[in-house]
Image (tube, helix red, strand yellow):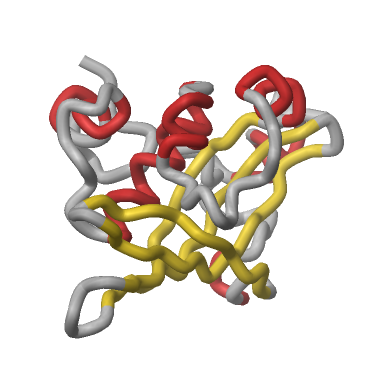
Length: 159
């Protein structure tokens, strides 16, 4: 059994898989964010579009979304904080995700917004932020890819 890409520490089947298949709806903005990250890593493009609020979703097809993401590999997710309003109609997730492209490994820090309609959470939009100092890529840090070795001896060497 493989671990879930969202880095919850749980097997995929017990974590994001039920959301990706549509068997269950993510009950919180954070779980929706984690499942969307897993969908990006697993190339589950229909799920990405299905969980993007229609008023905020770009006008693109599944094949266009897949082509745009072809050169990107999502490696790791760290959720910094998350929450929702008292009525549970809107929420947010502050996260950092590492991704690899043709130029190397990068960090993506975003404050994402979510709304809940008819008991389903939807991603609306994200605001890009500077990466926190403690999560920026440094040669002697453990590599975000999960290899257990230092970044300088792992993904920093891949170009």
